[in-house]
Image 1 (cartoon, rainbow, N blue to C red):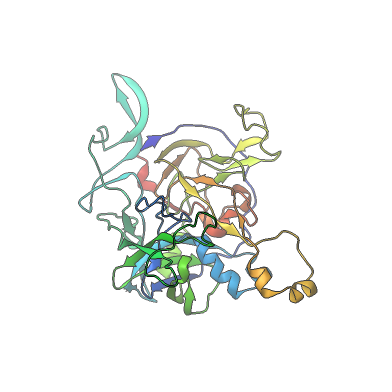
Image 2 (cartoon, helix red, strand yellow; image 1 turned 30 degrees about the horizontal axis):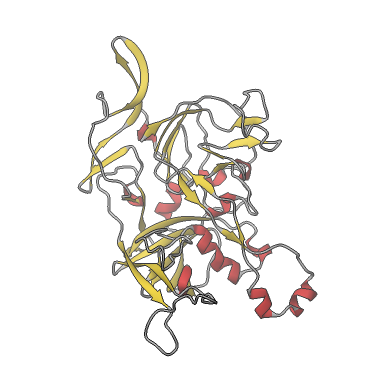
Length: 395
């Protein structure tokens, strides 16, 4: 955990034009799911669970919408996740699913032992601010991480849950045509394709599922979801009133992220939103408070951990052709066109707790798209930094 203190000001922008969340996308695995993030292992480099990543981000879910709708129909698409739930708790009248635990909750043995608050305190007669456990300093102990809090306990958190899945790595060998052994490289000619790689599959507990939020309906059915063509059963239901009430609640001076947040431009990553009106001229120099690089919030404190990598693939937009020419393009050749890989970014992890000096007075769904980086679509489309109010974080 770390505490960062800054202060600044910025003008407000108009509200977002995207429709609010309306649907809950429920994904039940039909067997194993894919648990890697693009890293494959060669026979010379078998290193266990390298590249393990689960659950899939909303960029993966966005692919299902892209396959079901035309681009113009999902221009204002809004997704958020990943979360998970228990099928029996996702009732149409009252829904409960699990979101990342705010980092000011210190957890041990599945119980919340203490709650840190940002408050003013006195030490040796001097006034100061910091994260405190009541009137005491934070306990010097080891606590659990990567835990999940029930959404219906957001206001009165008592206990948390661990991941309902486990990794099951297994090898995918390519055998010789006439022998039961893995293809080996020939001295004169290399094997035309990889002969061995390790897939990090994931097995979820019976009765559990992945949960995402959406403002667009997705037809229920079986879909291929993630890598290696794993099949899932997707169902879509309207968000219950208890969840809608929480998502539309106004955020004042303190809130927690329940999805990873990427702020800044498509070149620079920050811990909070900024306006970059003239590019990234300040890339290698200290930002000037009077420059066009202006903070959106007046940030007082941030409780977070190390950033996490974020990357996704977009459709290939190079050498665009007219619609008539595209229809004449050979399907096989089109399928071999490589996808464009986004710039590698670092994201503020889910569960981070923010304290700002001036109330935002807007729910996350009302935050303008200008606060979010734009790499093709705005990253708000994928639920970047979905925040819920956390008034108990300040005293």
